[in-house]
Length: 119
Length: 112
Image (cartoon, rainbow over all chains, first blue to last red):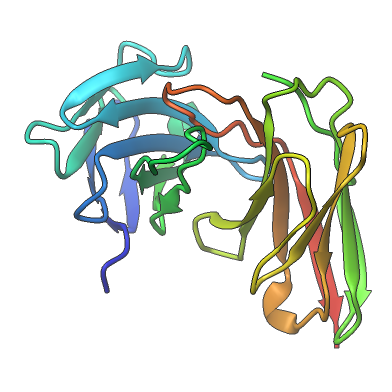
């Protein structure tokens, strides 16, 4: 399978603990995105990497959240001192910009997500 | 980002066509119209996109109004596997992050 993979698929933790999620994008994709999705809502953008550079962060990404992509390949998302409100599905996506006039188009390929439950 | 409005839910009988509407009255001249769908327990997947002209691909067709203030995703023959939440998204023509702004989408139920 050459799609986007995420690990773990499910994580249950107690409030106050730290958690880390991993995303492996499609190998030739230089853009990587993290989203969060709560029940009944569409995914919300958290942050974006182009290669190893973190170029954009949403206001949703509080100080307790940190994301890295050290070698421009896989990425990790860490949440420190988890709160019950952090319970959500965390989705990773990757894309590769296409050449051509429609430069705004780069289809994002999503992974299956990591479901976090904070007790 | 320009906003889109979609019905919360729709139903369709299996093997019948489905027309999923989307209103985007504040669309700008360079916004592309994208559709993604999210099957149960999966991440979203790309369906189709367009700018001004109607578009067809193996999954669906996209009909764009002449004034671009609305569009319709057309599934020509709904199957049970098409049951999903469908998101209509506007993406600005820029070379930035192009992160997707999802709304709440339309939940499509396909009745056998």
